[in-house]
Image (cartoon, rainbow, N blue to C red; front, side, top):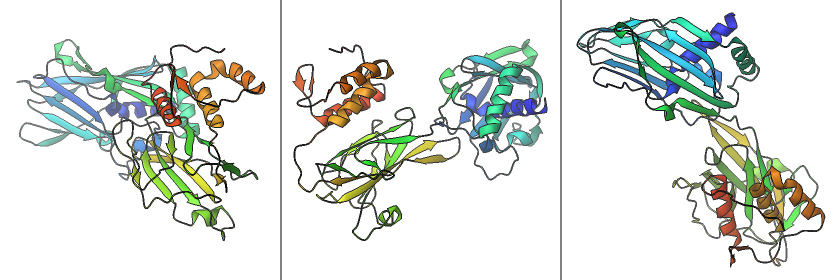
Length: 397
């Protein structure tokens, strides 16, 4: 029971994740809870700073202000829904808001008492306690066990519905009017995998490519657009004996804050790196072109936002060699990868059957009867992954 109560306290400290709560009549009372990091995909419980070390930056602000001519007693009610199911409903103790008083607190000060200022700016402290709660103990215990095992909120959709209750007016409830700010989507991305070019350094084979402007493709198990990528390409020098030697040099291409999961090697030192949201990725240092006959290593980092900072996941290290004599370019492996991404698991069997019977995409790529270049296909794939395009129909013939 003690552990269950502790988890309840954790959720009650998450008042700020409920976004903005505005009274239906703003001239009476305004309640505003602002989350600083609403785009978090990972939420470590340690970032709540339950031990009050003060070393973790606040991740939400709480403001309550009264515009009434008389003092008013209010309570705060929080409902927590996980994947659509309510697991907790908690109601705080009633406390008094003096005339024109206001409360300002954050995630560091909430557990120590809320500072309240009267109309003259004189401070006092309001203690918040849990006076009434309705708990789904089985669901809470399952969630608690997952948190204790990993230190993170499990992946899922967390909805925090807040209400302000006016005790002196028959418990009249002021509902949250901005539900879009009340949902936290936790995906806990854990991997980033390269697709092409090349193969892992753990393999003995060094794959050759026949272009100095290859396309790089990778896959991250995060919602497209929710993370950014750092991209590195290194040239292997003749004296390099291992990976550490290769990575001891400056990269010949280093890009930061990139949102797409593919990129063509730049043809000049000032490539267009506009992201889907309109921002521009950053090229760090000079850009050197690839050369025939040389071997290159590349790696990608996925930068994942959390409640107060970022987590960086590193991919494997891939390597490839640019052929000594560049011939025609073969994009068959890339196109097969694209087909898998577009078709999804429902058509994996049909695609695999085609491949086993010698299917190899080649020749000219057409769309609606018109030829398209590989970079146009890459752009369409990016739009499909980000939800800007939808697949209406698939025909296999």
